[in-house]
Image (tube, rainbow, N blue to C red; front, side):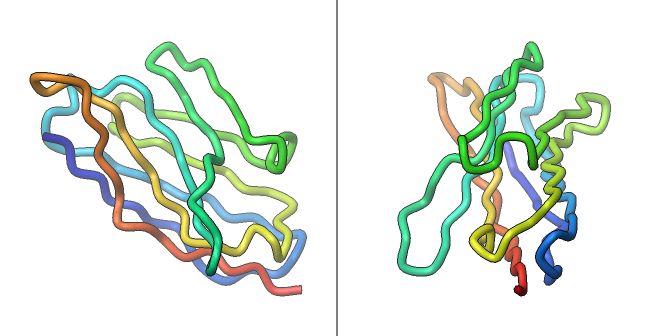
Length: 118
């Protein structure tokens, strides 16, 4: 199994930056793709960014040019650098990791709150 712990959320003014971290433990050798989703109050969870084991990245249109996803395999950690934050980026951010444990599975972090004030 894989366990994920997120950190780095908080309150920031519009135009500011935050960096989220998601540290993995457990069966880390089996981890494949990783990424971030977010969920704002009253809205469905939406994909923000993904990164493959080969470091290919993909972003939702609403964060392109502002957010950067990266991974440090030595630290088993994925990061989400968020720049030029907007009030509409306010949400709980969840990281995930896909891994194979008998079959392909997904683990989720506990979520970290990001609040952007105008």
